[in-house]
Image (cartoon, rainbow, N blue to C red; front, top):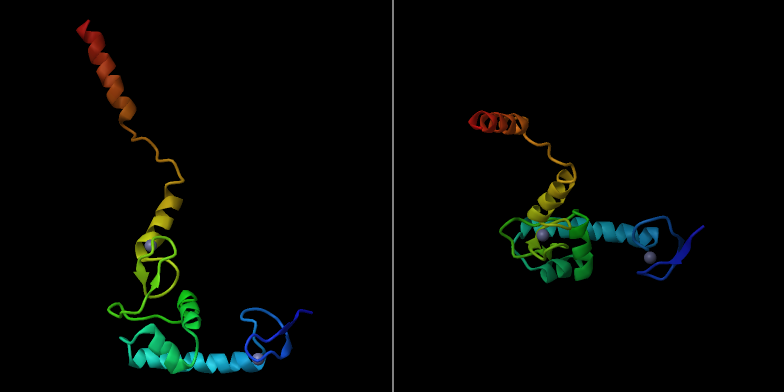
Length: 134
Ligand SMILES: [Zn+2]
Ligand SMILES: [Zn+2]
């Protein structure tokens, strides 16, 4: 059994997974998340600190929710977090679009590309002509 102290209220509880919070504080945090989500939905252009203030949570908690893709902001919003790969401002998740595409491309280039089928034929034609020239 993994017994821990709740990070928020200090109470001892049986830790399962996720945030190190007791069930009571976890419930409060989920309620705050709903509040934050609604606030962001109604005020898409506010700053991240305002969102944190409105939801009575820390800015790092907001960032965590964004990384988890639970919270996202509109494309024209000023709010953003850094892409973990190139540092570009993104609205949700961990990587920007181009880094995500780059990751997929790297996987694809792992397979060797086969040479074009007519390569051999062309060299064959050339050597034949060279033979005739002689
Ligand atoms: Zn607690
Ligand atoms: Zn990036």
